[in-house]
Image (cartoon, rainbow, N blue to C red; front, side, top):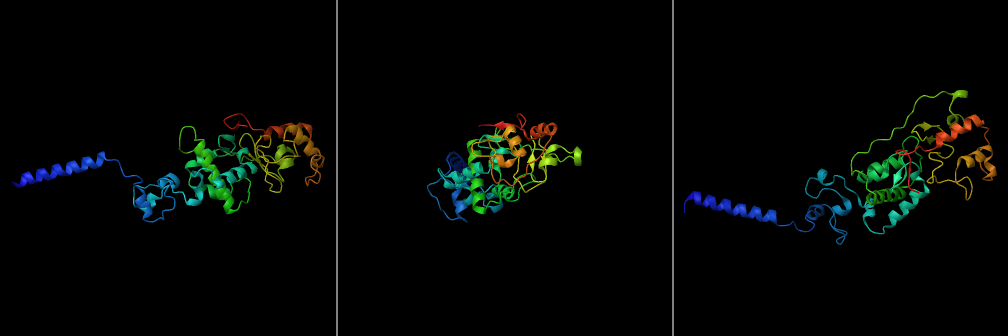
Length: 283
């Protein structure tokens, strides 16, 4: 048998092997072996590693394998009935996050769409909550609460995927235009701003105080506080509150304010949420 014939046979055998390998389905959890080279197997019945932790199982290079990786503390939302998700959702409601954000298909659009944050890395969400942006309240959550809140955000985002699929969100614009001071100042900075802050319905930041609560989206159903039991914030309720807070809440620390009628109307309008796309969704 000549040498050329041996070469031809070897090439035919190699072609058959490649064809068979391409036609055969990959073994179940093919990427798990690469994950287990560094990580301990802890949930053998839950599926592949990436179904909970994301990442890229097709490579042995750590930086690529951990692209989009979710540590266990932020992957609880992948398990049915996870108590971390339930507690995180309760915290999201109590804190009034939806007064500015969209989450679970409900909320307002004053700030970032949290349903679109499903693709974000947990460290970005963690840092945004622990070190809030200007005009975002500082809730001073502890680490356990932050992890539960991030799990709730992921769970809501998975159940309500962003329209158009994953991709970068168009940033919300917050305006910081210079405004007149003194008697010519707009009513919110003049009367409320020394103690309060708020995002207006047009996306501008108002006030600079941190003594009183953040008043963003005050008239929406997502605002967490109430002037009194059984009463929601409305323009009428705000008028009663400003005139004398203690008529609605005995022991209130805020003093009465005398706001002229010609300025009270513009104050109310600055706190309203304008129609979509910066409007209210749900409830």
